[in-house]
Image 1 (cartoon, rainbow, N blue to C red):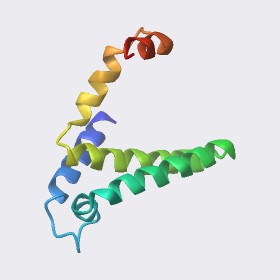
Image 2: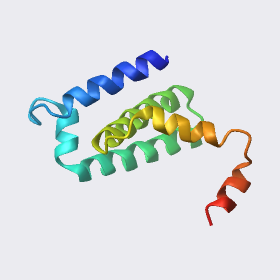
Image 3: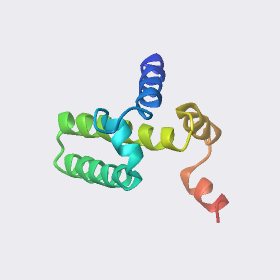
Image 4: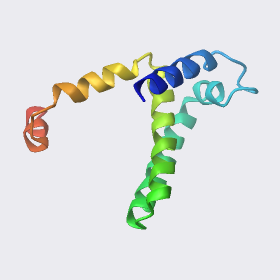
Length: 103
């Protein structure tokens, strides 16, 4: 699956410089507020699917949210691997401890 994420990241990277009239990714990059709105929308839809205990919708909305997160990262030239490395750094650290360390 890592290869799939790498391939998707490459497609997003390629499409962000396309004509916004022809590329959904380019249209999001052109109007940055649209990226934020989509992330908020997909987060809300994921939360609703979770509360409704709908596994198929949870998978669907998670995929939507992940895609839009990857567009946001691409716009800021942050490779997805850097996010994974950030997660890796937290391995073995309690979520409570990690939060305290940021204060």
